[in-house]
Length: 159
Image (tube, rainbow, N blue to C red):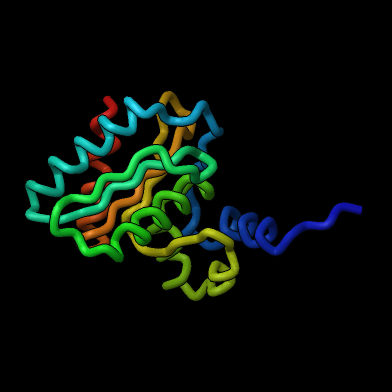
């Protein structure tokens, strides 16, 4: 008999849940992002952060959440290191933006709090190349929307 873990059940509920979570299926997992690619993402994110006078931490991880690259801009609060890491890991492991979890919690889906490695603070995005997940980016140092904007600019740096 197969036993489903609470994490599996909660993840399935997240994907099949309310309209807040109605989105395309998560991308399949591809080869992990390379160090060269991660540096391009971080450089583009740094340019965007500076444009908005933000001191940010940018973290790039592989699809399994393993660290590839971390950049802490001068003057960034130390707490942002762990926050950015958690955002990147959550975005990679669950193959969706951390803002999706934020929206789910705001909709009253408190079961999301049981997901191991879940982060509901906006600023974590999956990195998709050629339709496949290659990693995740997490940005911390600004407001949620600012962190998302910096993360998006980072991903755009791959193109």
